[in-house]
Image (cartoon, rainbow over the protein chains, first blue to last red):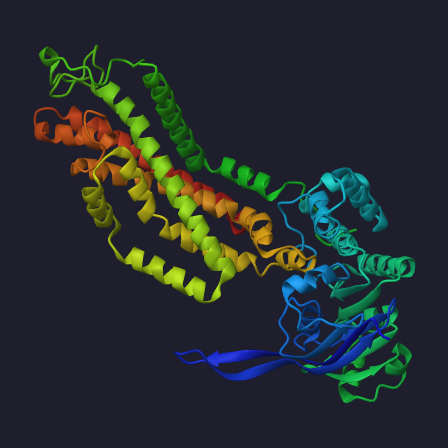
Length: 261
Length: 294
């Protein structure tokens, strides 16, 4: 059985108009998407801006209300759960966000930021155990344990993204949504962060839903690729299949847009 | 290793650095700080019965309505009380009124604004319509009416001024919360399973601190002026307790004969209010990151 199973997921945004703000129609950001993520594997999700990739990621983690469909995580349907019921499961499903500058609270030290998920999900941990675990997490993502005392503004974009990865790893999740996790970084930094993600997968057996608009990046990390356009999946397959013989017109357009160096 | 240079200074340090370059702001901060220290020193001394240069309530009818002289530097009033002593005493009362009223208005404004911006929906609508309704009243007349009903003692005045002046803060805090709750670090806090109200207090509120601080500073002169206006109309802090407003009220009868009774407290109110306004504006400029590229 797959770790994560998404069936006919729909996220529609109501369009309101007029004085009474009546619903005049819907924008179908995600319109009937189905896929599975196996434990310890990476599924890549590509598509241009506005194709609904990010919305899928948020809907799976219940950061965005889904209009319909089913999301089954480890045998449990989660879309119908209330936040209170779902909270213990957040420990197992984490997210790395797109903007390394916006996703860390500028007023908190890195140590405080990384200790927060520990406080929530391991309430029996003592302060000292938490501090040690924060140090471990920082070292796991290639930073130094002493950096816990610093504030986000003292780090570069690549380092911040590593911190965000450490935060996502803190509750020991089985599944992480990487939403454009390397898009805001330099190409050389991108490679370093991608390698880190792949190493961590090997080490910890975590599964990724890797969302990106960059086909080259997705190809290098994914076991399976989903191509999205206009809220639906237009093509799915192994990276070699997609690259070798893309059947869909949109995928071919997307592929031809990848710059060759 | 990164595409953006690392800024070694925190947003707070940058704000301080920008503020220090602002000459008007530094001047205003200096004067406001001076008034504040004088007021606090006078306040503490008066608790122990120490007054400078004279007892502000000591009447001496043989020395009434004297123009500024070597004994009474700013002259004496119609009861022979020393004007400088009364202005100093008034500084303590007027600034206390200003700061306490602002604290009351901040407490309400931050709470209402935070709830409104964080919870949203019908509650946001309801609270903002209440804010609109309160803002529709001319606030000074509202204060005047309420003080007339509950009686003009210093605590009533402070609380009433605070109670009608929180609406601006509430709107500002709501706007900050609306912006901040869409930030990715708030979404990240939610995704690690943090509770809603902890996110609001730990992640959102501290990031709204700078604009809240600016409105607080700008609220102080408003409250001082409101109290002065009330005192002038006789609904303020009651004599013999001196405030800048009621020194002027006492002196207005003698305006043609004893200019010093009106001029000096008037100047004190003017300069203090001006320095707080300029300080607030300078802090606003310093807190605004966009101004940096000038």
